[in-house]
Length: 291
Image (spheres, helix red, strand yellow):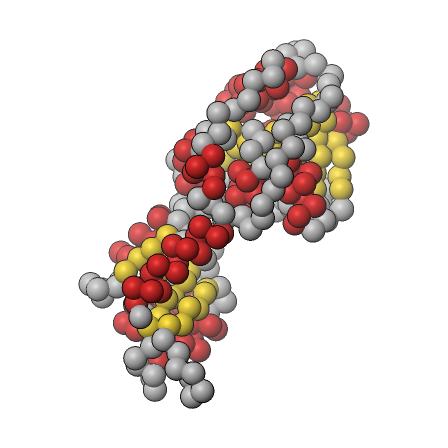
């Protein structure tokens, strides 16, 4: 600031340290404009205890009193911050995580229908309902033998039905560009995320899934933002995480399109808006307006 005057500062949570640094800096540099970014909830996070919640509430109010803009990944999270702020002139904007590559779309059709899941499983996020639905279809011969599942960088911390074991491949963790390459060569991207009381959760992998324009089978909360985005992008089928019949119908829908060489009618314009260069341009416009 001494050598070249700072006009705008952007800080991002979590952790909270970057916001605390700006709060301290603003004590002697009140002219500086501030965009306080929230990738996650703070005091409204349902996974934290009362002591931590109380601490975050105090910090939040200080942020609201000093920031010019609050940004976050989704509208439900932004609404949460808006409801607990009391500064009328404070602006709220949605800046999604997005994807950060320009993928050469392969548009392949594999000899075996290939499901791909990228990432790990933990807590209630497990593929059990997907396995159950798939196994029922397999046993009833609603789908043939010509399919397989690839788990990218996934720890085997869940039960695999013995009938499916020879259909599954676990790969080691790979660089993001390699994971995107594998996804682009799939016939179906698996998005598995259990519903919770918290709303506004996209999960980071969704944006990479959308970028490669391969059909997404979502076992998710159908009333949350991920399902809304998949539907808006016309990029796949969303099934209730716990509803086996819905999951079976979703698998059959995507599988039958593959069998009959029918492509999903992707909304390419909406998908392109999820590139980080587009999200950055949104943020850049806000910065220009602040200066």
